[in-house]
Image (cartoon, rainbow, N blue to C red):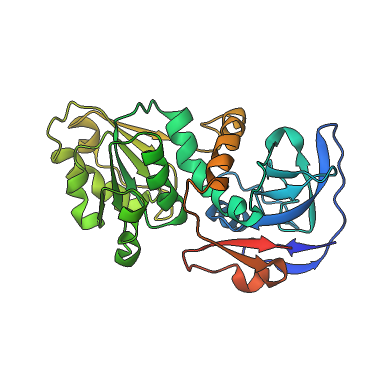
Length: 308
């Protein structure tokens, strides 16, 4: 069997032969991988920058994917912490961490959409109270996860979604996906009266946006929930103390650990159905797994999906 192999945190994966996977537990099964997305989480676990990185080598990266089980059925599977990921011709899954896909599901679209879409979908469904009629700002809306968050917030009943990002060309696309406004970080003040911030950037940009938003609120006693989901701009943020004293700001995180695995799994079928039905716009580009070394550093903005 061939797979992408990483032998150290500072080396890109190499496409080469590796041992066949073996199912050892009663809930495990060997499956054929059809499509696996190259996500920020995949890179971060592979280079050691994510808090869940295990540091075990050699490592086959890939945290999820669309697979064919021994009965020929298509599944979307999320892998637990393992050194045998989905960037391979075959892998081992825990069937309890997978869901059967609806008829007509496109493996590449599903593999591209589920990980970035799950981040905001689960945050709004499982991490915070999100009734219909809320106003939302999405920080980092031009990335794959942020772009999907704009659509998902609208799908869940947000009355207003403000997309915030740096890439002005990509910002211009977001009103067509449901954003009521698309602004740069320098214009963050227009998001002053939102109820929820979905933050995919963190770092200095997020910290720098807090006070302009809070100071411009019509009523600072109205609660604002800041949901920290991604950290593309930095793992730490210099949050000003005034942000916590001058308004009713609540900062929570949403991700592995703060949301139980069973809650993630429970939301997967509906998200997969939304992608399959075309309810969410997905950017995906299939790439042969044999080209993994060249594609590993891609920053084009498309979601790359490896196809063995």
